[in-house]
Length: 139
Length: 139
Length: 139
Length: 139
Image (tube, rainbow over all chains, first blue to last red; front, top):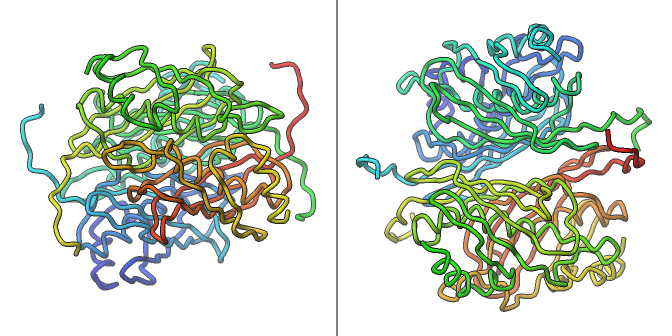
């Protein structure tokens, strides 16, 4: 997938649009995007920090799309784990995702969120990369 | 904390407001809220499912606020883990959080997200419940 | 699977034998075992606590075998997450596992480890419950 | 801490001794050890693979001791997360741990387990690096 194709795919998702994602770089195993800050991200007006739910969404996106841009279609998330290292201030964020292990059934990716070059959060997701089974009556 | 006090605390957070949270129930160890669906939650207009980042934010909120409503102030999230069980359709979600272990330094909570009574996602968070250390010059 | 069948399956695994597992209870969704303490479990002779690696192994076993005893064969672990709540003293441990969500491709289980009725550790694992794909030349 | 000091610390732990750990390398942020295979690690005599509980223990050790060798004393594990990538065959394993974020209250480390240079498992742990609070009567 090219940067333009991926940017088009993002544009078709209302939530990814709301995150204001701009693709900065892509290669076979990794992806880098910028997310444009918006007021609705603020967790508390006293500290003005971006809510952890936004950081989790960026970790999930970057981990997931490291796979998506390689295999060309969406993959279901099995689980997501996020470590919070520092508070994010008001302002844009950069998210980087990388494939740790590409498997025929399940794949693992890691991602990090940075602000002005400082690590804010990092984490991992696992994704189903097997072809979906045909629907059968539930057992 | 009463439901009214907690609802007021939520109202002061731009992100929690955006999630449209209404507190349904509270007790010493647990919390239940409804989150009002909005178009910006849609991950893909083909499937109309709510994005996993919203589910992660609800798991984090419910786990975190099971503690917050008990101890009366915010607590930093150490990490968050989310298991995705089924796609959420367009529509409101209910999140329930519960304290698993309340510790003097670190506490663990679990939470689940349901839609029309069906389990959509579940997970856990750990939180710092120690008093914050005094600021010293960084080593 | 009956308790006797499961106990026989455990007996064929050198590692599970080493953990000294005795099946206490089984039903369609859950399992309970006792693990017999041994000196090699001690993390530090000063505190005499059981090492976290043993607790992780018990969480993995109980979560995994809640599935195994239901579907009748082993399932690959995708990932494992363990929360440590208290130090375990020298002495036997009880592990309980439960299926959270049984899926056609991936299943999620949770487990806890107790000592004398006190919660020591708890956690979750995800497992591949899809039939294994046929081997093809690697892409 | 030097390699010799760390090897002495390991020698005082019955469980770490049982894992057969030999320290290969150390620096301010990382650690590398070899674990000597033993028959009790076998999960199933059909596949002869090492049990996931051993891999989890090695991830925990390597993540934890990346901190221990830097700060000079043990630190409590908050939680541990392990991704299983491939089956380990009978044979020694190498574990590498690295500090991701050293914090005044909580620190995050990552680790991987390799066999003959192939990635078998990887994961993360969080640890309490704050000084322990003085004991007070429980609230």
